[in-house]
Every structure is written in structure tokens, then in C-alpha cells.
Image (tube, rainbow, N blue to C red; front, side, top):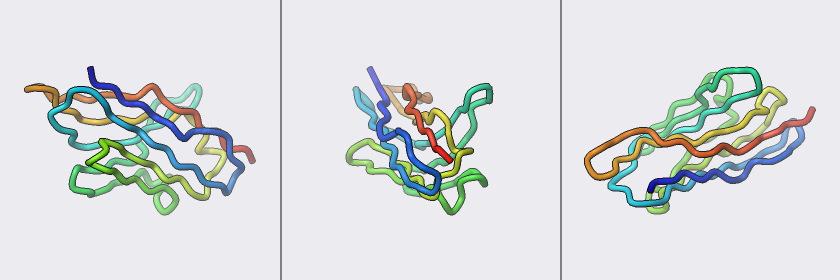
Length: 119
């Protein structure tokens, strides 16, 4: 069974940095795009960043220039380096990946990791 497990969340002061990790495990044929989303209390889940298997990236305007997404295909892991954090970045961050298992490709989600930025 495929699982995505996030780590690296925590409490940080405004202007600080955090690095999130998300590792995929289980019986997988391949992993295509990987992404990060976030959801603050009372708000809808929103896109943060995505990266293709080949390394092409895309970011939400709100995080451009501050966040960097990367991945290690050998480790089935995606990272999110978050710099110059703001109070508005406080959310639960979720990892998402398009994973092929046998003949079926579908999105998988992690359980989320909390990021709290104090001002």
C-alpha cells in the first residue's frame, strides 16, 4: 500500500525558515508530478508548488521567491524549502503525488504537517 509521510513542520518566527520533506513508500511503479498544498483553518486547500519528474517547477504567486520545491527521485522524496516565512504561511501542509501502481495512476495525499509562523 502506498503511503506519503510528511515531516519537518513546526513553530518558527516570522522571517525564519523550515524545510518540509515527504517520502513515498510502498509498491509503486513510478511517481510523476509531486506537489505541496496547504490549508489554513476555515479556508480551502490551496496549491503551493509542484515539480515534475524531470524537475520543472511551478509556484503559487504568494510563495514565489521564498519557497523552493525539489525532489530526489532515488529516494521517492519531495522537499519544500520555505524561507522568509510570514504569519500568512501558517497552515497544515500536505504532500501530493501522482503515483502509478500496476496499471492505475492516481493522486495520493499525505496526512499533513503543521507549520505555525509567529509574528
